[in-house]
Image (cartoon, rainbow, N blue to C red; front, side):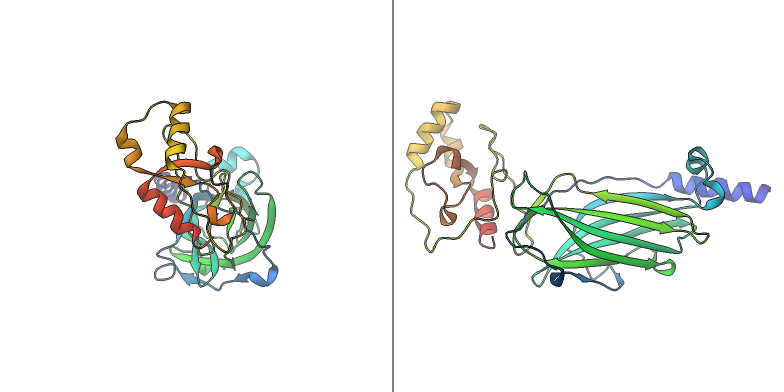
Length: 289
C-alpha cells in the first residue's frame, strides 16, 4: 500500500511540472471548393525532418483516466493515470496544405489507441468562415504515442480564410474513453502557396489591410495605373489630422482590394497608408492569391 501511494505521489508530482499552453491562431478562406479527392491521410512520421518549417496552430495537454477512478467527476480530477501533450500545425508541401497532430510528451499510462479527427472550417471572407470540410481521421497505436510522432491529413492549398478544428478520443486498456477537442478562434488567411497574409494596421486610422479581403476576386488582364497619392494624402489629413513628413516618407498607399483584382482606384475606403516594407510583403503575397 505504501509503495502504491508513493508511486501515485511521484506521478502527480511529475504531472504538476507539465505546462499547459493555449495558442490561438488565425487562417484564410478558399475561392475553390475542397473536394474529398483533394484529401489524403498520412502514415506515421517522426516530426524531425518532416515538418521543421511547419507553423504551429494550437497546443494543449490531456489528462487520462481509467475506469477505476471514473466513478465521479471529483475522483477523475484527483486520480490521473497519465497525461499527454500535443500541438497541431500546418505546412505547405507541393500544392497541398498538410495539417498535423504532433505528440509532444507522454507521461504515465498510455492509451491503447488515440484517434484524431480533423475538420476545416473555411470561407471567402473573414466574417463568413462557415463551410465545413471533414479532412479525415488518423489513428495512433499505443506504441506510436510518444514524443515527436505526428500524423497528418492533406488537402489542396487554395486561397482561403480557415480555422482548423480537431476532436480526439484516447481509449485506455480497460476501454475507458478520454474525449477532447481543440480549435482555432480566429481564422487565418493563406494563399495558394500556404503563405499567411501579412497583417497590417495603420496606427493613425486603425484601418487594417485584411478584414475586407474576399477570396473570390478575379484578376484583370492588366493592372490599371494610379497617380492619386497627393489627393489621398489630402483626404487622409482632412479626416485624421496633419501628419509629419516622416510619416508619409515611410509609407506607400495600399489598395486593399488591389487594382489588378478590380479595386476602386480612388475610393478612400479602399486605400490606406502602409509601411513600405510591409506593403512589399502584401504585394508579394498577392502574387499567389
